[in-house]
Length: 405
Image 1 (cartoon, rainbow, N blue to C red):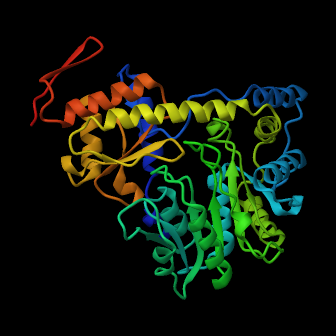
Image 2: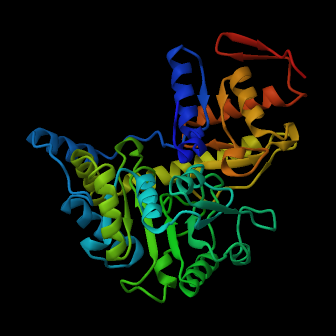
Image 3: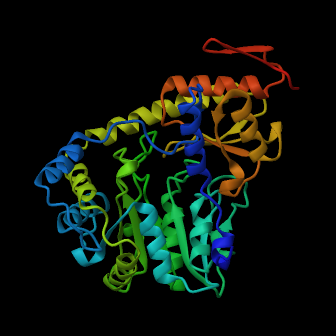
């Protein structure tokens, strides 16, 4: 079969693959615990459900403008003013089928073949593949000090003649690291001085812990004119627990939004009008669900950290936000894919291999599920990996016996 050169370089999303595997195991009645999922278990806000239902009841479910319906753009403008203290116009806003599509369309709008986009590592699994889909090159930056917190020097060392953009995700997937105000200010300054695009993937920006406050990139920008190359990405998937609704957005200068809208218009057209109405309901509605989710996640994080710290040899950094722990399991093996497969096969626990995020020997574990799943999942992992564990483990009525060393 003949397929394109680009297609041959693109791998399947490991997180979506694990979601599919978990669903298949559950359909078979297996007591699987999915610690790889990147979606909260909370229900969507009632305001979102009611808004979608109201539009469905009209029976007028038609095409939407490629950049989003006016009501959603108005809601995004309000959101940007409230959370970023930045007043923008409808022409500065484009709604998309999720934050993922907004990032993808932004990259397609700014990258030429062989140009580079820089992002800190560990990184979200889709960033390198998105760059490849543009014929461009993703350039990961590992902090030299061995932490999950890059310094501006780490970024500067990678900037070259082919660099077109820097992509920042904070709080970070997979580590939960929230970058400092000083770092964000330095990145904004670097991009303005070097005439680079800066894409802020802010999808987790309100899900932060320990009394932290969201960082506003606009505060550090000297150029807020229509020449600005700052692109802010956000959406409803994480903070409103509306992953399946697939609504995100981009805020940028008007010319870039026009180009992005043209691209999206040929790719997919506008997102579903019903789901856009749901997003309007969430953004304009009662916001208590966001804080409730944040508090739940902070408690879940504490439980997961406590349980992981009971492991011999496991190294884990306490996440500042989002809903993932990115722990070093290299004491049990250098190849994270093998560790992940071992856990699935032996104790039916799914965790995402760190190699997919650019760091071998690590596993990403989500704490957005139930406390029961967190505690039992880590207990199963410990039993499978720790040679000092007892010989037997019960999962429900099923008895497992260690037949490995």
